[in-house]
Length: 478
Image 1 (tube, rainbow, N blue to C red):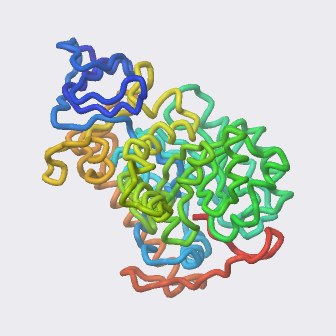
Image 2: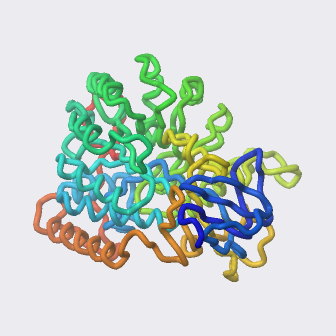
């Protein structure tokens, strides 16, 4: 009988995202005790459970570095919304009707969807935690799905009246002690800060005191739309808030010198190209970040508007940056090479994501000694055949429906196209019940009483700011 702690992935096309190993046209991976024990063209017969990877692309699991997971039950309701409509519909509207059980249902659906599509690590930017019970529900769902996750504790809707004069909820200390006291667990903690774009300067400074008391990495929105032009990163730099454990989400309208400040202090960045282009945040900062030496991570942001798959995020990111690069070329037809390649965006979606959430030494590449967070993508579909350029196929042709097998820390959580850790029908039913509750509550209330499904409803817009964060206005947290 094979050793239950040994799995042999046999005969796949391997994209390692490890510069020393490179890619293998055909190769094997041995997983032992949850970690990658060996990678070679042929490891021969071994005493292990064999997963046949012939006809599959084998690669590291994706890492999503910024998703407001709780919004999943309202999937695509805002696919035609502007930024102001999103703020009115979601943050001034639906978010106020979320009960703890709705936050649970949203996180369960969002985390399961991520895992199903090959995202093995999800940073849950959780700003629907109005009470401790909401936080407990969100965390419970992350543990239940069996994926790797980072619970990034933010503030609930009542603390996002811009610029907020209310400090970050100190309940994060209880959360740390209750849920995140064990080393090496799959679900870890981060601090989702509002920062100087969304909170007063005084509150931001006090929030950062709490950051250091908690001892968790930080994720913060900066540079999205007009608010990014108020030089939030420069202010943070002046007050000593920039650090290597901070991930800066969006960065679209930050000045070039602010991007250099992030680079100089070792910070990471998260690009959400789909939502940034829909909601007018500004052009994705991918190329500008690369120019100062920051290799960004990628993220989904909100499934209320765009899809939840990293395949879509990679395709949008590379297509937009190539368009920007080509537009700057006086003679595009004479270019010798493209500046951004498919392997680059795969690296952004895996290794750079792992580094951004503080797990670069554990996951993000197929490297001996790292945890076995691995996905297998089928290549037998007509849209994938014949396989000529594996990285190109992943970025431009693959989709979530082709993810056949998923391992997290060596545990098979999806096999033969079916999740093994959750009941998908139950997950979907809970999400539909939450959706129905939210719609009934909205229609009976006075915030968005005209709310409806179908795509024709456009919530009332919210005025964007024209000055610094001392002005009284509401802002979106997309």
